[in-house]
Amino acid sequence: MTALLPASSVAADLDWWRHAVVYQIYPRSFADSNGDGVGDINGIRSRIGYLAGLGIDAIWINPWYPSPMKDAGYDVSDYRAIEPVFGTMADAEALIAEAHAAGIRVILDIVPNHTSDQHRWFIDALAAGPGSPERDRFIFRDGRGPGGDLPPNDWRSEFGGPAWTRVTEADGRPGQWYLRLFAPEQPDVNWNHPDIHDEFTQTLRFWFDRGVDGFRIDVAHGLVKDGELSDIDGLPFPLPDGTPEGVDHPHWDQPGVHDIFRTWRAVADSYDGPRVFCGEIWVGRDHRLTAYLRPDELHTAFNFNFLMAPWLAGPLRATITSTLAAHAAVGAPATWVLGNHDVCRPVSRYARPQEQVKPGFPSLQGYLALPADLEVGRRRARAAALLSLALPGGAYVFEGEELGLPEVEDIPLAARQDPTVAGTNGENIGRDGCRVPVPWTTGGSSFGFGPDGGDAPWLPQPAEWGASSVEAEQGDPSSSLELYRTALAVRAANPALGDGELTWVEAGPTALAFTREPGFGCWVNLGAEPLPLPAGATVLVSSEPLVDGALPADTAAWLQLA
Ligand code: NOJ
Image (cartoon, rainbow, N blue to C red; front, side, top):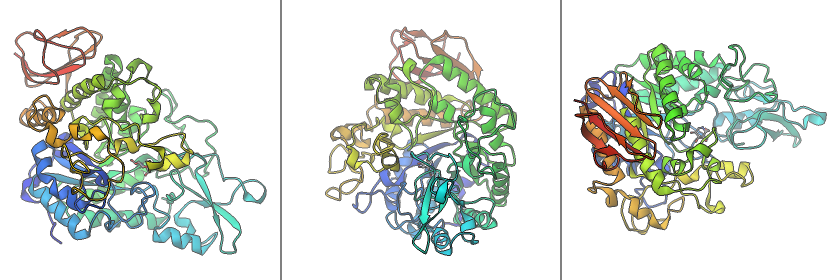
């Protein structure tokens, strides 16, 4: 083992997670070292210099464990090994060591709601039959109706259709059903079973022992199901504001889930140097999100309410204010998230008329019918980057966001690989458009994603991808990449940024303006008219050039205040 760290270069700052900028690496799509068309760990290793130069504090790597890849690695068949397509355990240990040596923390992705149907436990459960202890590690039930032909309840899969799959028993007859809130190949585990607790505790320790600094927790709000498996019966989720406490959805955000994370926190706290968690928690109401961030639970959670807010001053200000109040109440830092591997890229979201955007999960599907102006989307995404990096707390940057990549909207249906496509018979085109492999060079057969002449990337790249590559953007002061580099350098050097508080300044109904101590201001113009800046302010960085000293439409500026 080469990585029994923390290395000295990352050990010093115990509060790093309260202000970290975390860069999300979707390993399939980041860098392909061996030319098989799929990104890999050695590809990530080859880009550590780029990541250090960008100025991020940590990387979060989507699942890299052995997987049949029915949901791009979120169907895990062994939690303590490396998927051969991505490399070896030695590669992973070398990556952790090299990232630490470059001052970058490493966060992995743990998937505790479901396994792969190829996990040893599920194979055993199928073989062992109804009523067996092996089946009790999952959620098997008899069906309803004559012959048990109907699913046990009315729960729906996130990828479309019923959340239950029926098995064929050893005698060849249709048998029990198992719960799978996602794809049929992702059976939900039973968190009432002690083996499940032990398995995940050992998994956390396995990776913490290898120097890993934390985990992003997949579907953290989904682990516990109501004991009765009651019908949903039309109950919406997220539950609306004003829902009385005590009214809970049968399989999301069940109160019992908090006990699991208290146990996990104790595991993390048993290590020297903070080992931290970030929950993927889609629960809507702020107080239900921050309940996961009480001092003995998770450290942080993705702020999806901010990600879902349209590019409009009123909704953004409201969500920022309520986020900060709810996090302050539990002493946790907020996070600011513009994109990830599940949602439409911000350039393409903000390219749509924002008044017409419907609230809800921000996948491409929700935007397809609305006309797009990508130039407007790019301006807004640049301004949103400065806004999110100026707000109190930590921030996430999804690979390619720093290049201003748009969603690839025209991937042919046959080339799409997201299980959502099959689950909805092609009605929902899924999430592949934000997962297209990153362009590193202006030319080459995969724009530098893999070696020139290697296998085609696992998703097709658009012909114009090279214009948004690292090679095209670096050194160009007007590029998105240089904007991110400058902003991250200013953020790292400015004591007002990162964790802390803000004070709003009234700057009109289509503007956001706030100050942070000492002496920092962030002004954002979301309206059409130029926005004047405060007298005596010096511009540290702006997302577009100023016009006559004022901020033009869809522009943000960071200011040193007089
Ligand atoms: C959330 C992950 O981000 C997503 O990509 C995955 O499909 C589901 N959880 C199921 O694991």
